[in-house]
Amino acid sequence: MQVILLEDINNLGYKDDIVTVKSGYGRNYLIPQKKAIIASEPAKKVLAENLRQRAHKVEKIKMNAQTLATQLEGISLIIGAKTSSTGTIFGSVNSIQIAEELAKKGFEIDRKIILLKDSVKEVGAYKATVKLHKDISIEIPFEVISE
Image 1 (tube, helix red, strand yellow):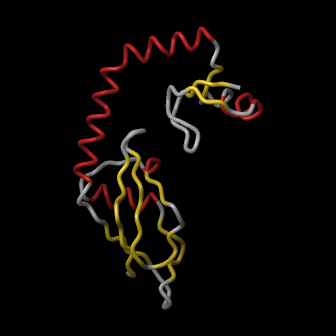
Image 2 (tube, rainbow, N blue to C red):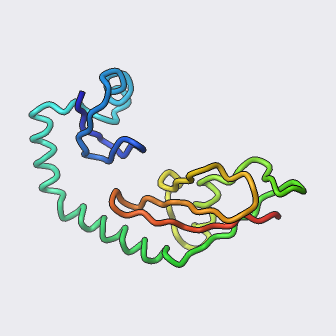
Image 3 (cartoon, rainbow, N blue to C red):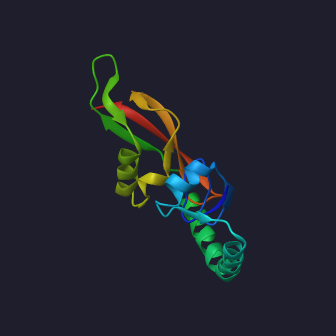
């Protein structure tokens, strides 16, 4: 089943992409949650016209994302966490703490676009990926220290 995505969905696609999904996933989750519509011929024509009209706006968004990526290039974060005597964190460090540290440095970034490969449960150095645009992502190094 082909659907047109109405918003970005991790590991599936970005807004306005036409993707093929299993029928149950499309009909029981994506369409009722208003995350996608069925990719019929009229819907594809409407999508093509909307993309043509929005082309300059999308280019501006991409340029803003590129500018933000260059500003974030030299950033490294230090995140304090409560730890045990062995260096294990009580709980874990997640995208919320990284977004808060970036906000302290003057960058308002939504926590949903910050991706961590593994859960951070020990003191040490790690990297987080920030997906600013579907073509632009940047890795931000951060270090977890004991408070």
